[in-house]
Amino acid sequence: MTASTTAAPTPNRLTSHGTLSGRRRYTNLAATALIWAALAVASIPLGLLILWVARKGLPVLSWSYLTESIPTRSTSDAPGIGPAVVGTLITTALATAIAVPLGILGAIYLNEYGAESRLAQVIRFLANVLTGVPSIVMGLFIYTIWVVPLKGAGLTAFSGSLALAFLILPVIIRSTEEMLKLVPQTLREASLALGASRARTIVTVVLPAALPGITSGALLAVARAAGETAPVLFTVGFTNSINWNPFSGTNVTLAQLIFSNASAPYEGAQQRAYAAALTLIMLVLLLTVIARLVAARLTVR
Amino acid sequence: MTATATSPPAVPAAGRLTAKDKHLADRNFRYLALAAGLLVLVILALIIISTTRQAWPAFTSSGSKFFTSTRWAPSQGVFGSLTLVYGTFVASAIALVFAVPVSIGIALFLTEVAPRRARRPLSLVIDLLAAVPSVVFGLWGFIYLRPGLTVGYGRVADALEPIPVLNRLFANPVSGSSFFTAGLILALMITPIVTSLTREVLESVPSSQREAALALGATRWETIRSAVLPYGKGAIIASVMLGLGRAMGETIAVALVIGGGFQITANLFSSGNAMPAVIANQFGEASGTYRSALIGLGVALFVVTVVVNLIARTVIARSNRALGKVLL
Figure 1 (cartoon, each protein chain N blue to C red):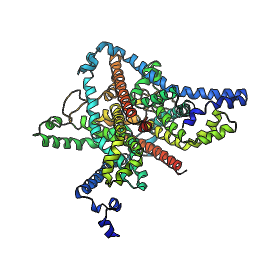
Figure 2: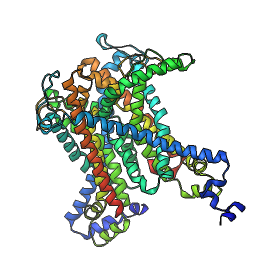
Figure 3: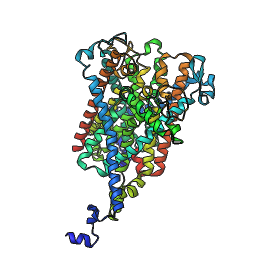
Figure 4: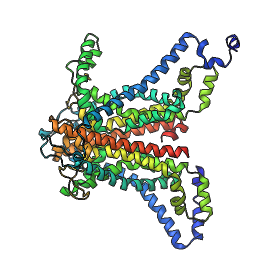
């Protein structure tokens, strides 16, 4: 067996590189090593960052820290990021409630009705363009169209959630459309053949079949919304005490609190930033992992 | 998928068979879906109209100086954004220099090198990197990285002192918050998006391409270089441009680590500024023309990022229709 491999050039040369010239073997090894290194270059900072946030945040974080008000003086060492926790939950939930239904409906139009029509292609193209719009521009947009006309009453959690919703809407449209594409055409035909209307087919057959994928895509988008700072910076305002009302009064999010406290020269303010960073990163990573688990179940089926 | 396009004519037929109100509900649902689709169009149009209108006072008072002047002096009503445009491009360029080889490397790793079993946990790493909020990257860069980077920049600047060109790009005095720091953080932030787009491209390269190269006796690297990368070249360039668009619009992390200096300098280790960073840092204290100048920066940023996006999508559409479907 071994004699034949050395005697005649057989396909075995491919798997055992023993007969390759030194230079080719070296290049192949070096390239493979570089490709491995690229992975390390990306994973090491991620590991360092998560460990650092955990090390800084864990000693500070406690239940009361999560629920208490933010001290009015930033020099204060007193705990409290409660208003930011509440604000983040409210804005993210509202943004989800606005963007997910609209995104799914938009995707339904693109995949089930529009398909390859001119209008659908234009919408698909513009959805991609909208995905590329910087988040701060979305914040400025809601500021100019919603906050300014409402004068003082415009800075609310709802305004922030509008900016976040428009930010993730195109992402949800595109990811949902990809999932709807995967639903076998035969399912639709079977339903239509039974006399169900197009709308009924979509709601009772197509959507349920694509649900895990749609959920996964939506969760990833929501995770992104929860961590965004720029869109809420000019639309939500700031508050030191918990505000559960999304439609009235200013609010604050975790991301905003981190941003405003990051460069503060006071120990207390920085600790609140660390606590907020850990809370936010746990929330976002949790959403991402759940999204992946949902997606994994999808591929097993 | 073409079946989707051909089946709608069957709908009215099915509708006529059912009760009239059922037919109406069916049509309403269709219009509702269409309205949601059209919303995308409406939002884009409103972004342009609404922000440009608010920015108009600054555009008219500064004229072309808004983009050609380097002087940003809000207290005197002078708004020249050239230093900010420069900073945005320099930081993004640095980001690309680091992120592109790493991203392509990881994408190759995930598609060509990694054992099948290892691919899912590895792509989870990329997903997690993508999930870390911008502001957390900024906080980490500002507090954890900055002190070490200041020392490191100093050593590099000293070492490169005698070498021409390089001693201009990496020079003393160094600042821990600088174009370079912003570029490094941006590189981390755009690596996931460039990686996942590149990966989709590589995955859609037909395996016959690889098999042909392997059958000719090529090593793994020779296969990648001669068959995989050339096939996906156009689409990979487009992925990089989409990453560039992302880097230019990235706000909060850059606002925290770029330093805040208003200057055009070759020294990448010095403090600078960028369009989105200035908007985020100064909006709270601004009013009147000042505020509309900041919104004007937003308009400029919007135009630049949309143009970069459009070019990327044109490149991909021209280069390869099959791969175009992957990214478009």
